[in-house]
Image (cartoon, rainbow, N blue to C red; front, side, top):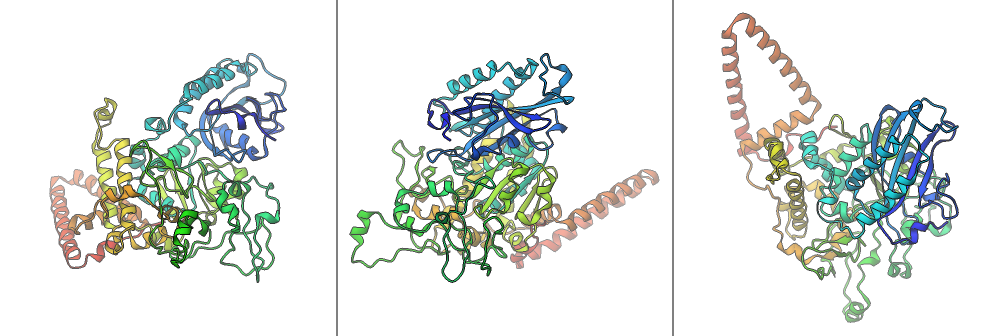
Amino acid sequence: MESNARDDPKGPVLHIVVVGFHHKKGCQVEFSYPPLMPDEGHDSNLLPEEWKYLPFLALPDGAHNFTEDTVYFHLPPLGEDMKCVYGVSCYRQIEAKALKVRQADVTRETVQKSVCVLSRVPLFGLLQAKLQLITHAYFEEKDFSQISILKELYDHMNGSLRGSTLEGSQVYLGLSPRDLILHFQHKVLILFKLILLEKKVLFYVSPVNRLVGALMTVLSLFPGMMEHGLVDSSHYRPKGSVSEDPSLVESVSGAEEFVSVSATDIASTPPELQESGQPAAEPLSSGDSTEVDTHLLKPPSRTSPDSSESDWETLDPSVLEESPEKKEAAEGKDAELPDAFDPEPGTPITVQPLPANGQGGVVQGLVSGLEEDQYGLPLPIFTKGYLCMPYMALQQHHLLSDVTVRGFVAGATNILFRQQRHLSDAIVEVEEALVHIQDLELRKTLNLTTADLRFADYLVKHVTENRDDVFLDGTGWEGGDEWIRAQFTLYLHSLLSSALQQDNERLLADYGAPFVAAWKITHNYRVWYSNKHPAMAAITPGHPFQGQYSVADVKLRLSHSVQNSERGKKIGNAMMTTSRSVVQTGKAVGQSVGGALTSAKSAMSSWFSTLAQPAAVAAPEYVEAATEVQP
């Protein structure tokens, strides 16, 4: 079942696809150019098994509630030599009576269709801008048999995008960190840390364009992630296609516990690992069952992020072995290699070479397999079964509990996803800018330290105090989208540099000791640490906003507590209600009440300052423990 696109290196666009809703068959592919199946015509409904969810991703749940919408989605690779396939879909619906040519199968009052682009490159915003124009023109024809415009779109996109580099503003078109910070404020840093910990994060909102916009904007804060970090983010198997092949599982002596491994994961294994004889799967560390069904297995419980070992860690220890040349040189020295699963690994033994074209280029990562810069970024977060699904269809629900999926960052519009909270570590309600975290230990891990709050407050102030017109005329930098991404790059560089220090307890305390302990046992940190990155020597360790505590820090933490805790919100609402009542009463009885209210407000402010100052001076630890991330 080989597609023409698998061997076609002509351009970045693989297919142009039209998906429609049939009153009897449901969502189905109505047109594809080039054909999705090599032996079928462009009007065939047949799909490769790996892309069986394509119609449901292109035509999202609840689409009938909107006249138009836009979807970003990821598809798994079709061949061993391919990576993630990036999809952009523009959905529209029109009244059936408006059609010039009404086909026999159009029996409903409205016609719902999506035009999709399947691409090798993650240029979501650029593809969307071109696709929206063509989709509008396609619907204006009011005759969906006129497919010449879609063929022209395929040729035009491959001609205009051929040779395009994944650098600069093209990748970030349509993704605005300014809007994200204006909406989520300090919680943006919590989302950033959640993904660093490789947790199961579900974004929820409708329509889909708001959902994928928020999710992909968060990912754009990670240096190099959009450009090079998503190539392995969709390596999953559709439901029902995972056979009980003995080669995909490893039997454990003494217990019949196993984890199945996807074929794409095996295919991506470097040849040197395949030859090493290392098993392709790891035994689970929890559970006492002696009879296990691959379709009924549930992920092992993680009661605490401080556990000494990640149940889903799949980094093969053999990747840290020395090359044959080094091995021969080391014979007889009885040198012991550091354990890849040690939460406190020793000195890295592999040196990542610098790019030949200077400091600004990227090279193939020796361990991660990703295109990395001189700092080892992007971090290999979306690898080895950690998925990125900007939009997840209801038919993909089983992936939330699939044993081959160790985590995900996914977006959903169906309420069934939000109701099954036990399948996610965190649920992000985009509309209300809320981050729901059920596990108490994870909440404590994600508590923002005083230095973190200073960093987040610094971002919020620069975004809110700068006018929009400053950026429209191109004269703005501070508070702009690129400036915000630069701040998160500095934050991550500093965190990585601090983690390399031997006596780093004080440095890492500013990031949160529980967070750093949990992060150091993640797959992305271990892979990054397994290489030496010489460019890191130029990064100053320590939090960018480290420093002595002050009264301003106490006020900042109290403000953050009021904004993010349920109790604080209730108090704030009560104060607003009381304030309105007092103002209305003051207007009725005269200005004397207003004067008294001003005096009382001044007295309360002075009292709070007096109360806060001794706490900051005599007990700085109070600043750290004053609040927690609330569900």
